[in-house]
Image (cartoon, rainbow, N blue to C red; front, side, top):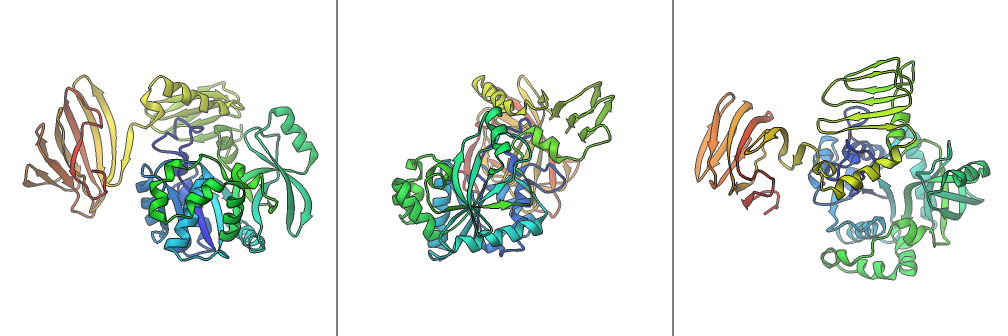
Length: 460
């Protein structure tokens, strides 16, 4: 069995923590491990890391590779979508990769999963996946259904039909309903939330894809190099629309482990531990006479007085306040920010790169101050700026700096000046994190004022 983890989505419903350039699968919501890392670790009792294929894109590839390394799964395969085309083309790309690069045959089972869900306990999840594998080997498209706990309007639904082995044949898939319809589904008792997890053999998937989506099938049968070159011409369609809603081979296995797709701040509130007054608190929070309220802080104190049924989420550049039950509208907030051209919709004040990260500490006319971290053994590209000079002060570690062909070692508490238009790069030759404060001066200080000449990460 091969595990296909879909990690290319750029969800907006957990703004301001989740941004286009830092989506929710990389958030650490319950401790030190991100949702993506938790997803990978759930499968390690089932398969070797080399049996895991992660589908993502170039914007997130360094996040994926860093987290795979950190959780001991660096042998997993990473496949890059040239553009986002929804889940059906992503799975078709993964199936092609499995056939061409891993040598799987049509009888091999693929278990497809999103990368941003909370599932526990792991043992019960592992047993469910084994049951999915067993059903999939019989030629079925197997989906996992979650017994609804309330009339949820944020999920699609699966209507269970007649019993079949450990599950049910699927009568129909339903779109996200309004509140009244969701209550009818809950009362009926044979409707389940659609988890987005599927299992099937390569042969079954390709057979159903050829039957219902011949365009995707034809493109996906090309050699991998050609498929990647023509991937942009793929229709953008989900696996649900493309195959599951049309196939006569679909069966549903009830999923009895705890599941939460973390699709809203209301879902986050449900997951987190609460105090005696029903408050979920993360960060530096001080609730006075507050009840049933989420307070999540990152960089400053959040103090609340007499609050009830509110969601408060703070980052160093945005504060979002909403009523509980209304957090699905956060997506509309992000759309408005994008229409207004606001930077906050796309990125944090911290930007992540293959070599480390940078955080904007302050800025104004003609200057910008950043904290830059460079991981051990990593280096920035050989580059030049037309419109700015830079002054670097090392606060931790030692920097090796090249400026116009000259090499300088800059230890802790020392600094170096990089003139405007000078070719330069910095690297961390040591074994500890390199941290510097960078002061930029110039008439234009945006990230696109970078001319790269050499780059070990292929960004030239």
